[in-house]
Image (cartoon, rainbow, N blue to C red; front, top):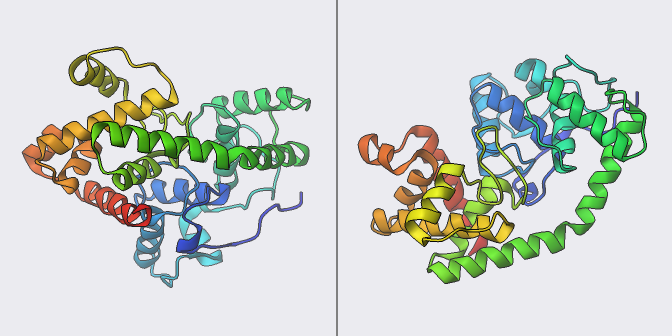
Length: 290
């Protein structure tokens, strides 16, 4: 098969773009304990920091680039590149992570973990049927090209979708009196403004809201049912952040820590190291959105 991607040279300039290959990197870093954020394909501060920490720990040149040495050190999830082989059930690797990311962005709900299991196969067959391909559950050349074409079509409509999400973030931030750049940064960190992203834990939408948080906001903070829409998801997230800011006397760092770790845990033991990284990443993004 023809390899469909060249090596990655990642810089901070690529943070605003969701890239399938970055999703492969995020999965591999997560498996080694160097990344805990969403697999969103965005080379943001958390991904950059995780890559450099991994390179330092592995005794590699800390250059933030994905070269052969870094891929080898990442192990089975660091290779092969996407398009280098026919993908089928039971395969594992970087290319499987990229496949899963592309399927996710085409509307499938499945774990992005680099392991081609039954859920990935079902999602692949559904994609193949929808695009008039033989639904054989094998990711060959025609299927891979169809995935990239679908990705390009989706990207053409992305600016209007992103603008709509940003408008809703600003609307609810104004409504609840929460700092707009903070809300934008938190949403970007959680989902990259993806409207239908669902995590393995069940967190959903732009703000990655858990069902328990949604119920708490409806019953305690708002006092009414909030529709399960993009706007509703953002409203729940902003209302919850306002409450956390109130509980922690306007301290953005502690409020963000409570968002990530839970307010009770933050009060009892303080932010965990991974929580502090999350907070630092959101506040760094906030500067970009100011």
